[in-house]
Image (tube, rainbow, N blue to C red; front, side, top):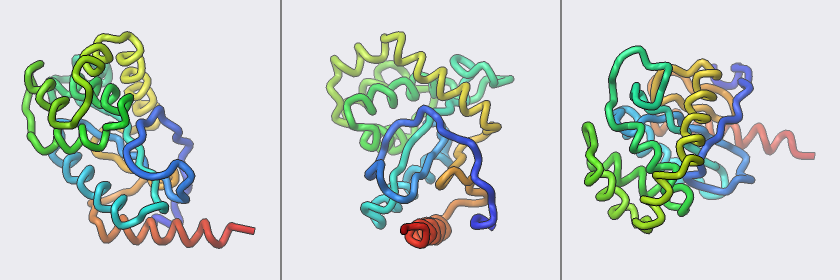
Length: 194
């Protein structure tokens, strides 16, 4: 089914997580830091990156299901996920988004406090002064708003949502299924080479 699916016109303002931008397979993960299924997906992406060096490039798009910053939410859900999303943008600026993701998902936060956000920063190894300064920058909020707007434009309304080479992965995510898709996409790219 995945092979027959048409590519969608998606090119969001994604943050780099793993891999080489020239890899033949690009994976984009739309996620919310307070979504338990997103934690599972982030773990799958780590495993996939480890198993496929040079073959996959994984990018991340914040889609906090929090009415505080997401105007498309009709009711409150994941209060605090906007702050965690801003933190992800700041961690990515320091090249530590992967460590930040692991710290957030590992703590299994619920309605995080400013102190917990600083704990996440410390666990992920970011420079706290730079991190705190970044959280207050207008550009950081603008990046988050751009990610939310683009996510809505692509018709995404739930997390996690994963695209591989601009094709939406449907159904339950498993490492085996994702690996088959990565292998298939790598083979297709090899066949297209002159």
